[in-house]
Length: 157
Ligand SMILES: C[S@@+](CC[C@H](N)C(=O)[O-])C[C@H]1O[C@@H](n2cnc3c(N)ncnc32)[C@H](O)[C@@H]1O
Image (cartoon, rainbow, N blue to C red; front, top):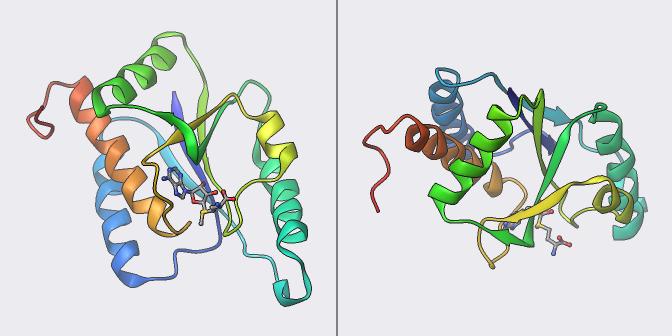
């Protein structure tokens, strides 16, 4: 099973990029993983927040493939303990899923069309992070999940 993390716009802070690369490098020892970056929209100053969300939504929808299991990262989504998150990923692996796709919204979140297409929503906390910051928090959690599944001494309860 491949895990794909779809994000909007390049990571814009070096301190985030360094952390994300650290966990992505580690992740590749456990499973096929890719961060798919949708280029930032241009001239967003002329767009309302809803227009931007809707245009980003159209680009997001184009990245999805038939058979994908799509989970949106959303502060109003389901909260998991790290062990539960690992178990959820394992279930998809065992079931033979081809692509587990996690999606981080743009600065204004997801359009209704993207919500309608998704299979579920996952919250990393009830607090809201920037769409840039979430990348680092999520890649660390994904790495943590992999170490839990391999019984490695990274996670402590
Ligand atoms: C700045 S937030 C957008 C928040 C905005 N309230 C909205 O309409 O959804 C940008 C993106 O970061 C992600 N995000 C932010 N906080 C999160 C959290 N606590 N859990 C999961 N994802 C989060 C989501 O993908 C969200 O679409």
